[in-house]
Length: 387
Image 1 (cartoon, rainbow, N blue to C red):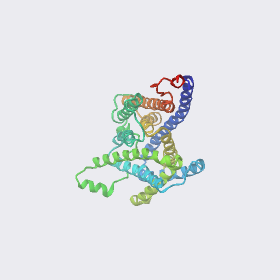
Image 2 (cartoon, one colour; image 1 turned 120 degrees about the vertical axis):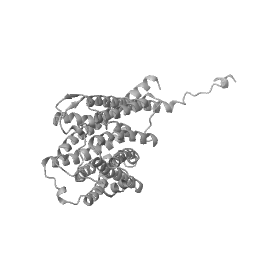
Image 3 (cartoon, rainbow, N blue to C red; image 1 turned 45 degrees about the vertical axis):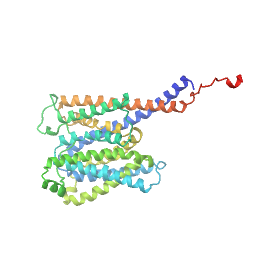
Image 4 (tube, one colour; image 1 turned 90 degrees about the vertical axis):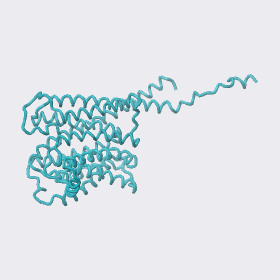
């Protein structure tokens, strides 16, 4: 095959990858923007005293009501019969990625503060990256330009998110308020979740509540990283991302409802009295859980866990921007510096991802022809004719 034909083949592959990449990045941007809106709505709802565990239960139940019909009507041809092993993996996804992840976050948030919790959430991309590399779920070529770009981009994005959470700097816009302790945090303050007997046990060992909260938040980040990476082998067996999200949310919802009924015993705490809380929980169920988990699973199937995790720091950017515009929160220099680092890091990860895809396509095209021209010249080519 001539060089011109090879170039056409690679160019066609690049065009295909570009179209798919556009949909992929739009989906991931939509997810993070949706989370930004969710944090702004939830901040106002939680200020009214809504029990966070009750909020989590309602959120997942509403998400289940939204995602089950969506999965049923859109993925009839994609669903495959569930084997015992696949069912077991889906159970682990729901228990770890939905139930444990949310429960540990709420426990950690109640024992620390919003700024610390938001800062630790940026460990999710790091854990995701480490698990993907160690388990060989995704190939990172550290000696190639694409691998270096991914690594540097991930570190830059995480650093930027930490700066947004932990460093204020000079106020550039707005007025200082008395409730700015958790300004850079997209998470509302916890008001109603305790770790119960587990906390009492650890306190008896001499571990203080802040350390317990930090351990819960680290475990929460690790659970989310496991959930993101574990989806890859499950999607190979069951290539229906929306249905997979529906099964996961169903399992997580059952565990959350059971735990919620056991831990929140006062009936008055299950009543949402304000319009803000009702709007927030409906939005959280439909968008923050139902739609977002479906899009994240689809993006994970097509882009891999490293790319999905690289978008997570954008939550701080969107929530901070919406907080300034809608809630009239002050804008600080730390937020601007952090946002610039996040965007730069995200660009490097995307560039490295596309560079690796093009290189992989080139290698897959050239490899079948690598032995075609391997001709031995130990004997004269016309030796048979000369005889």
